[in-house]
Image (cartoon, rainbow, N blue to C red; front, side, top):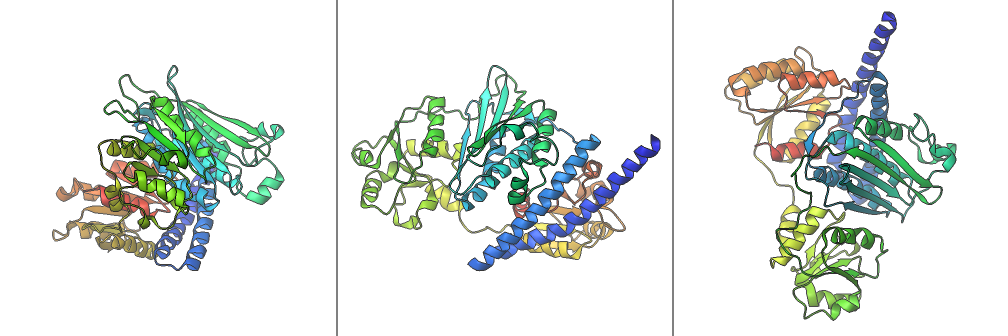
Length: 500
């Protein structure tokens, strides 16, 4: 038995090493592809996006196999703490919206306002399950279909219910009993046409159980599927609700059901008004034109045909009280009045209700929108980057330079420590790889933290290692957080812009 355990440990160590050796070059591949896309021509962008998608598939395969290995070893960790689920939802929605848009799939979101503002669970694992379910929903839904992401709350049991529904190929009753088993897909034809390992649902099921809940399926072949994860919120009394409108009063809201609407958005969109007892009415654009004297109302236009004179007429009549959704429908926003409030899809509840509040107070949110859509702003920070891989060093330096930061490069842990010790060198952030010669990232972090000027600096460990112990070692040494390769540009941007 001891020999068997030793062999299992050795196999796991070998597996972790292989994963690291794959993730490290994939970090460079995906990173440089992201950088290339900024200045690429349309045809080049197509090639870059195709290559990036293929890279994502490789990484997804690695992660699936890695998680299955951890589950079999009993090494999956659940880290429960209080957090805002609303933020997790918004980040997840933004991640998958563009994937749905590429297939002309309506991606609809509903978030129950009564979900506690803070719940106690593992946000990383919740996001992992949602990522698996949404990825499958978009993959198995044909062009022109619909994918819906719903977050519901059962107050009597303090239970969160996350639903991912689609109008895709569905799963037969016969195959549903095996769908959560490892390496299983609905059929050989499905596997051949759509690809994948068949591990995503197995992993999601196990994670749901570890979170104290379960994962369920309702599906009908050729009509679509709904996967529901139900987990405890573990909320505390008086924590408040996610969307609270008690501090202000909204006027009557008219939802203009436009010529291009498929009515799917209307059904989910108006759930907010029903849940919060907000007065509303669904009207046509012809009805809206008759409301020109009702300046106190708010109008929400959904998927209109902006090329028609009828549409232009009603926009001109109520522009200062108008919120336009679905900005991808028209090509030239500048031809409309600056008084119009424009919300980009997907419609996130925070943005929607902030727009309502601002219009109620008598001004639009276009200034906020203009600022958010402006070109990348530069920020003056000095960053120390340590990595023994010259390609990854080049990538990281290109990224931080993109945001206007100064940087210094170190080829190993010892060099990073020596550079940091120099009194003339003052850094705001350190990005340091784990597996380096002479001194590992962990050892280098320990030394840096022991120095007087190393007490308060922000340190981020970089690793392609699959071993949770390695991550924990870096955190215990003093890393503020761990970034897993391949690292996305957005992750680094968030760090650079947030740490002061």
